[in-house]
Image (tube, rainbow, N blue to C red; front, side, top):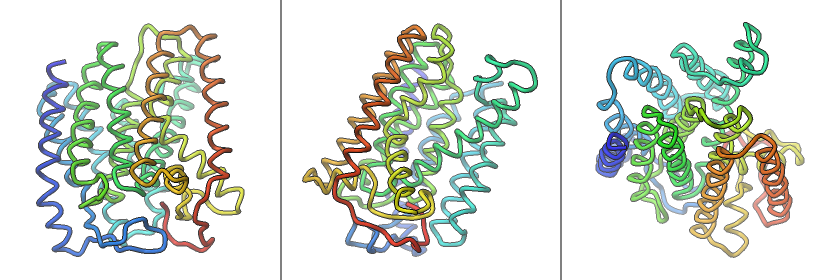
Length: 350
């Protein structure tokens, strides 16, 4: 626990302090997010905040690992660095948005596979070469899906960083309870970096993390989900727990996917103010109330994850069926909430 606490404190102050020069750099090089019809801010806001988060995680985690753990954390950070670089290039307008989804994210997932980090679902159920291949495919789909979900989650002050921080709290707790030092330290570093950045990013935001930061956080969340092992839990609970920890962003992505698909739009390629937070804000909660409500969704979902880790398979199935029914009811309810409809020809994802 001492290592996790050190990682948290170092990452917190590093991110908090780095945000100041990073903001100045963004202004100097013209990395600024301008107001627009699909944006909620009304003043130009510097981007590149993801660099502060990146620096916080790097300083908070790397120095605490040695030997084999350092080699694996190196693989994780290699993939995360690729993701952050692709996101920054996209923020700069130098990449087509589909490059990050169909090239950048799968490549980063493959780096994890080469580092020995992968799902362990089918290898247990099926076994043999077939199980390993299916687990590799599942790992890539998981990494791409969660990374992409965080990419489109970064649409309101404090939302993406706060959701990542909330999920990190539960990753730290679950890893600590199961004696997983690498996962708890890395999650603590992410928690510290995200919390430090929130000082500058919560409404009214003075800096945005951009796609470089959002994708970086999403990739690390996906990685933590793959690395988490619950030795005393049932096999069903082991793969369900990471899904629940990341329940807030999965809920938002599900809402957007269903809503946009029903309107004939491509979920990850069409931007708009139709996310859960947008709809909550339009339902008299305001932006701060909407963001805090999403934090609450993350806290409730994470609490369910801890509960499920102690349940039998039958009990866990009952919980997940109930939670899924509640989530789908929430999607149906929010579909009726007011939102700003988007153009089918909109060029960028969010």
